[in-house]
Length: 121
Image (cartoon, rainbow, N blue to C red; front, top):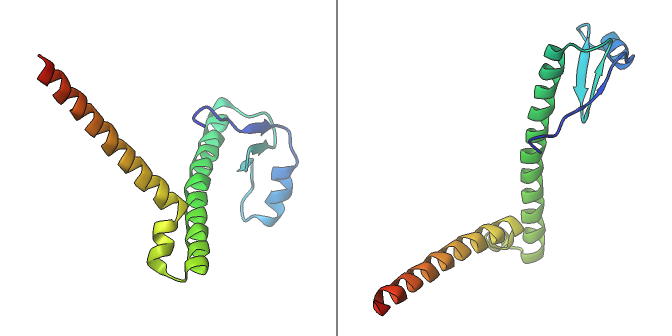
């Protein structure tokens, strides 16, 4: 995702059309994976619109995560009729608990191996 870039469309009429309904005169605009520009974009405009694209991409991921989290919790609430159970059964919470348990297990295994190696010397 770090290397994702928008799709640049130069000499487009879309900024012209959007300028009729917008309170400003739009030169270039970033919407979804596209950046439309009235003419040929300078490197500064490309960088500026790429920053908008990156910010929207991160926002989409974070907002999308919270929407999915809420949907999972609502599904659990409908299924179990209990808020606490819905929270514990949320797929994102289960994954978090699993990762914590897995890290603890790995630490304990490392301690056991270390104790075993110390006992053999």
